[in-house]
Length: 242
Image 1 (cartoon, rainbow, N blue to C red):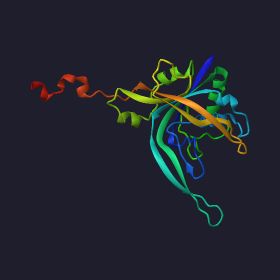
Image 2 (cartoon, helix red, strand yellow; image 1 turned 45 degrees about the vertical axis):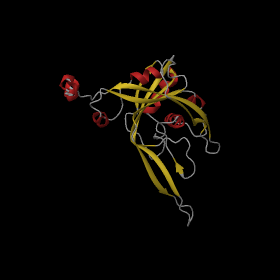
Image 3 (cartoon, one colour; image 1 turned 120 degrees about the vertical axis):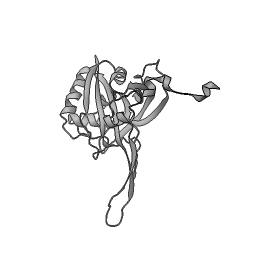
Image 4 (cartoon, rainbow, N blue to C red; image 1 turned 90 degrees about the vertical axis):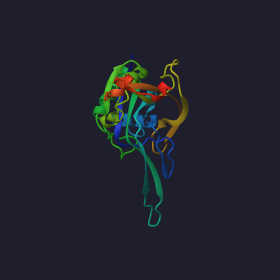
């Protein structure tokens, strides 16, 4: 039987790199699979040289509940006495994501316990990006797609109130192939190099992963009906008399 681990990934800063190279450390607009496999492995106390095939085989869907803002940071690093290369590092600031991880129920239960009592510190893509709590929201039976649709909106209350006049809010969903049902319209498909094979510092390897994208509408718990929404007859159109 399959189960789904629901995580809320939120914090002051997050960085989800899929193609970072040398002095430019970019971030995707949503959490990558390699970062989440690393987070789960750290929670269980796995070393970089330990196998991760079982974690990489788990199905993943990500929901963008609060996209945040792109933050561009400049860093200088000393190398010897003269060299000070400038690096560019990108983050998502004030963002919140839902991660829905599907797999065998016994494995999901073990991961859920590890998230609550992690062996190694957990972070959102980089060590400088700690998560806010709660990180683990729920463990539920079924499939990831149902969890994506049925889990309430996880944005901050402040962000929800900014959209208080919208009864329903549209969310972007990025998922492994096979999670989004065939009858649901997909708006995009892309390939990322974020499927980890090994985190070993001497033999780090990644391969390609294809994801599909769609959108869903979730209810806004902070919705406040305006007078015009409550009484549409109050709207006056002077052109009607012409």
